[in-house]
Length: 386
Image 1: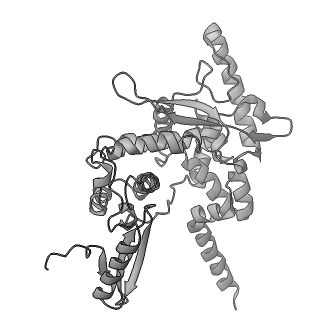
Image 2: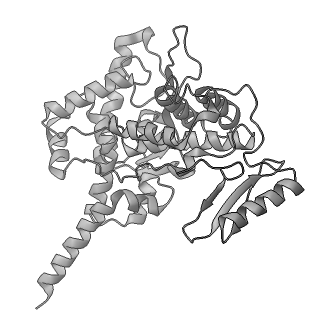
């Protein structure tokens, strides 16, 4: 293929056999002209060039442009911090730190990033074993940062628009069976983690919600639990003296308004919480002046919320001790939902108990469980047919 002449670089043939050319006006907005032939489009561009203050390539970028990682961090701090919840903003900073900062693409000047650069970057992430959710989170930040760069006239177009990333995959949680739950009820009552595990299995609270529960949220007389807060992990924005970023925990409002809810307390949860209250009184007597009472239901032996790594280790030791499936703590919430659906509880009730914003969210997560119930219903119908 021969080298293109001046004025032809922005001309190409469309799939509908028409020719198309583009140009930029003085406000840095891109426009298009069309024609049946390449020559016709070229002539239209010449007319535009002679009559208006336009360019085929757009205004020249400033001489001093930031690297991509410099711009993404500035974009997050200047344009996203005030519109996001602290937890969401912290997760964005975490994605930046792990995946963009000091990466090959992060060190490139922003105007030199191409679609090929970005596509290779995403492909490498997938090849490295990152799941689709992680790659999509990275892509969301990159796309937003590049769109803002266009508004500020740092670049002429967003090269990320032409990349492809994995489709969102539905997560099918591993859950405990009825038999597994019965094993815990009958064999593990003396375990330190028994109250928090049983409370989670029979309320469906998120990990952050159960960790943030306070005794003032427990109504023993009415047998109700009021969910009002969540223990949230927040990434620190500024690195320490060694350049490392850390995280801290805060008790905040739940993720959505629907998450603020009241859950009936089953007898088994009522008994587990009474046991937890007695254990906590023992902890107070042992720790004495060292006990920092913050009113938490599930606190460590000194009254503050659990160290999450320590809790994670003890939780897995619990599962292994009783030969239970090794599942995430969050999957105890999925266990609760699955037990409800298997008991023919309506999806609307499941949504309300779980604190999902819409019933669609519940349906998307538990479609596979619903499908199994449909199959069982049809089998029952077939048996009834003479």
